[in-house]
Length: 511
Image (cartoon, rainbow, N blue to C red; front, side, top):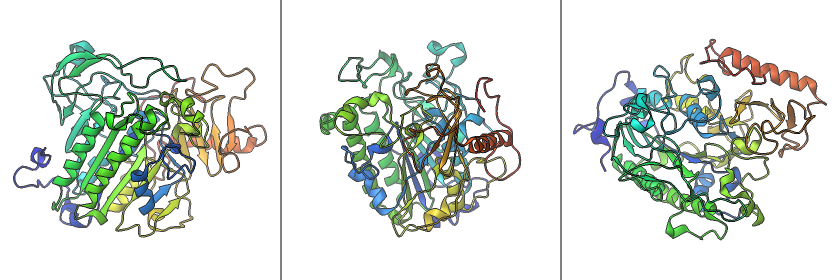
C-alpha cells in the first residue's frame, strides 16, 4: 500500500507554491485526527465513571494528554459537523441549513473556501483523509440521475480538490448508498451487486442496528470489514511516513459506531451488553493498534493525536438495553444525536502531544470542533485571513498551560437536525425551540401545547437541562438572543471583518 507514490514520486517530495514551511517541517508536529461517528460522551470510561463499556486504549490518550470536558460538535448530526471541523466555520453559514447530505449529494464546501488540509499544505504538510467523507462530491454523470452514475469514471470536487493529497473512503454514511470505495478521485471497483443490511427486530429497541439501505455495492466493498480496513490503511500510512522530513496530517473519519452496527466475530458478545457496546470495544482495540504504530515512530513525542466524535449517541445504539444494564451513553446529559440538548452535541474529545503537553490535564471551558483549525494554525504559524475559519478559536494557550483561566470562546452556537438554534455563553444556554429540535422528546411539531417558545438552562446548576428558567431571567434570554443575531449577521463569531453567509436561513427558524 503506497501512499507517497501518488503525489511525491521517486523523489519523495514536491515543493508546492507557498510551502516555505517545508524546510522547517522537521520541527512541526505530525497530526492524527480520529473522528468517531455517533459515539456518546458517556461511552468512554475516562469520561464516565459509571461506564459499563471499558475503553482502555482510547483512555491512553486521556491519561497522557488532555481531556476536553466541555467539548461540542458544531451540529448534532454528521455532515454539518464535518463541514465545521474542516473549515472552522459554522455549518449553517453554508448552503445546508438543516439535515445531512446523502451518498449522491454534490460538494458542500465551495471551491474558494480554505479548508484545514489546504492550510496545513501551505505549511508543508502531507495531508491524507481516510473513511467517511459525507461532504458531497460529483459522481460522473450524476446529472442524469443516481441510477445513471458511471462508476468507471473519476469523481470531481471530492477530498483531493478540497486539500487532501491522498484519499481513501466513501461518499456518505456507511448506511447510505452507493457503497463504493474511492481512492483519490477514482472508484476502486465497479458495483457488482445490490446489497442491504438486516432489518430484524430485536431487544427493547425493536430494530437491528446492523441495517443499511439498499444500494449498489462495489466488488471490493465489505460493510463488516470497513472499519478494520480503514484502521489498517491508517496504520500503513503512518508506517510509510517514518523518516520523512515532511510532517503529515491524517484525518481518519470512522464510519462507526454509526449504523450499520457491525462488530467483527472477535468482538460479538464481548461486552455482555449489546452489539453497539461490542462495536465500541472493537473500535477501542483498533485505536490501540494505531497508537502503538505511532509509539514506534521516530516522531512519537511530536505527534498530536486527537480523538473525538461528530455528535452524540444515536438511538440506534439500543439505548433502552444499555440503560437497563446501567450504562448511560449520554452520561448525565439530556437527549442524543440530532438534538439541541447537550446529549446531541456534547462529545468526547481527547488530545495528546507529548512534546508540548508534559502534564496531563483537563480543560473545562467550552470548546467546539471548529476550534482545531485556528489551533493548528497557531501551532504551524499560519496566519488566518479574515475569510478563513470565521468561527474557530485558538485553544493553544489552554493546551500548553494547565489551569489556564482566561475564557477563549466567548459563546458557542449549537444547531439541530431540523435547523433550530441554541447559544451557550458561560453557564447559560438558550434554546430557540420549545423542544429538542431533534429526535428526543419533545420532538419538533409534537411539543405539548403551552410550552414556552424558548428554553433557558443554567448548565452549572442544571447540567441535565431539567428546569427551564426563561420566565425568571428574561434579560439573559434577550442578551443571548441578541448575541446569536449578531454572530449570524456578522458572518463570523471571531473578531475580524464582516463576512457573508451562503444562502438564507429558512423563514420559520426562530432567532
